[in-house]
Amino acid sequence: MKLNLDRRQFLAGAAGIALMARAAQASVPTLTARPGKARVVPGDYPETEVWGYDGGVPGPEIRLRHGDRLTRQLVNELPQATSVHWHGLRIPNAMDGVPGMTQDAVDPGGAFLYDFTPPDAGTFWYHSHNRSTEQVARGLFGLLIVDETEPPEVDRDLSVVLEDWRLTETAAISDDFDRMHDWSHGGRIGNFVTAAVSPNPAALKRHERLRLRLVNTATDRVMVIGLHGMEGAIVALDGMPLATPEGADHAVLGPAQRADFIVDVTAEEGSKAIVAIHEGEEGFVLSEFVVTGSQSAVPRGPIPVLPPNPLTPLTSASGAREVPLSMEGGAMGGLSEGIWQGERMSIQDLVQNGQVWTFNGVAGLPEAPLVEAAKGELIRIPMRNDTAFPHAMHLHGHHFQEVLPDGNLGPLRDTLTVARGETRDIVFRADNPGDWLLHCHMLSHQAAGMKTWLRVTA
Ligand code: C2O
Ligand code: CU
Image (cartoon, rainbow, N blue to C red):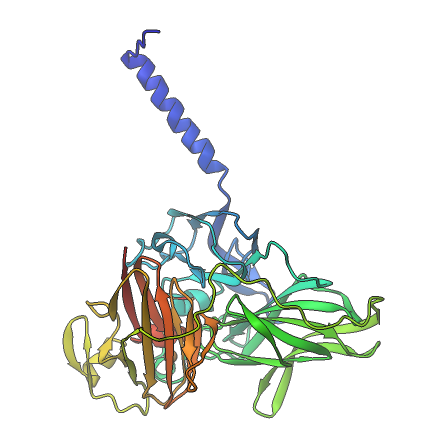
């Protein structure tokens, strides 16, 4: 048949295509960053004005099956530009959500389509990666759960989103997001910690088996989270299954870190099972559950091992290219000068520009990457903390393992806390092409200079 395409038909056709595109876009689920209200402090306090995904804090729990695709149209209804970083996911670079590096920040009124397939199952999270000291503190984060194809058998699967709030006397978020005193010390630490448990059970039964997915969304606070009236083990860290569950009644979580526990409720009927935060000798209840009856199926037997992910741990660091990283600066850090935006500056000038920390002598993003790795190369980074504070080091797009003093490798992680004076050595296979951040996830420290980047060539 002869194809007779005149201009009129062509226009009609093009309009048709445009309409179809709009229809297709309309069916993409949205994730709207916007102001909202949340009940943060119970009792007579007013609700707290927040910025949240779909207006809530935490944002909607995004849950999919391993192998499923995730599509979300970020819509920005905030008064500031924003972006979403999918923390801990080994996804294509263009989906990583880092303004100025992998995408432009989305202006107020704008939108951006995130579309990828998470390669691993586990507990992940998403959060703003623009002006994150402010935007995460205001509430822009949520949990992302990728369910294993064959999940372990538990009676309840609960997420526990830990949040650190700095509130005023009227339960408003204190808007001192860029105080140099915080930035140069331990970061912006709040005065009210909460745990959002979802779904939140009215009561628990003795001997019930729970999976608890803990995530520390704090901008800067390291949390020691204790589980009381429950017994079990950590089965995954930062989304990645442990080959052998690690018996534990608490977890130390730096900002951005996750721990999945599987526990059995051991509290007696009539007493309580408790999630608490511990500070030195003191403990504060974050969540408590009355234990009302007994689960029939007892005893439960050993804590199960999660099925392995496609990313399997390395067994040796041998042959890795070594690229050292030294952290300097901050209060009591003795930094006298550093390079910022290509210019050598005195500490006074750095402070003027809000920069007080350096990686290898450079504050903020250096012009050249820390390392340019060929795809598949093993990279080893000894990270020396020459400062007076701990730092939660996070690598984008990859999980790494710690090279332990005995030469063995630790579990896969995406964030590792390095205490003052320590050197912690990490190794990973650079197999995800693109430009990736390596930064301190104490977001105040990141804003004040603690960031660098790596390039993995295709
Ligand atoms: Cu969770 Cu660069 O971030
Ligand atoms: Cu830090």
